[in-house]
Amino acid sequence: MEWDEKKLLLNIRAADTDDLLDRITAYRATLEIQAIEMIERELHQRGVNAAQITAYAGICRQECLFDADGTAKMCSLCRRPAVAQGWGWHRLMQKVPVFPRWLRYCKNHKPA
Ligand SMILES: [Zn+2]
Image (tube, rainbow, N blue to C red; front, side, top):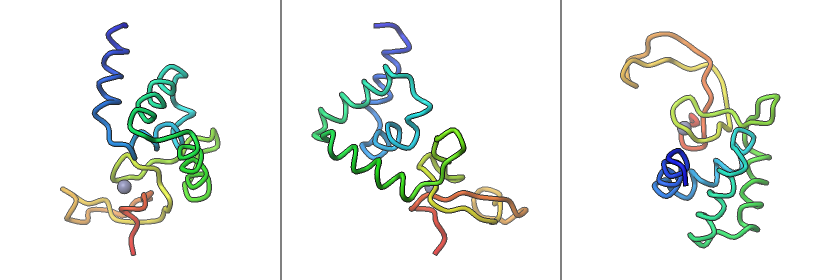
């Protein structure tokens, strides 16, 4: 096992399950086949089966925003896939509004 592969494996094992599901569904187009296999193996070890991964991918296809290349757009505030976008405020230290900018939001950061 090469160093990069070991580093990737440690990263995968440290990631939470939702993050891994996002990676192999929403961001699948950005991954090497080897990384997809490693993530799927880790998910299976955590008790997530292929049908659950397929269901998660289906929900993402319905809810997430995608670039033309098929990669999900990422939330402007975290690494989760974006489900909404619009104008918002770029905030200094996430508090003080500085200037308006186009933002994308995941389910957790989507404004009410
Ligand atoms: Zn977010």
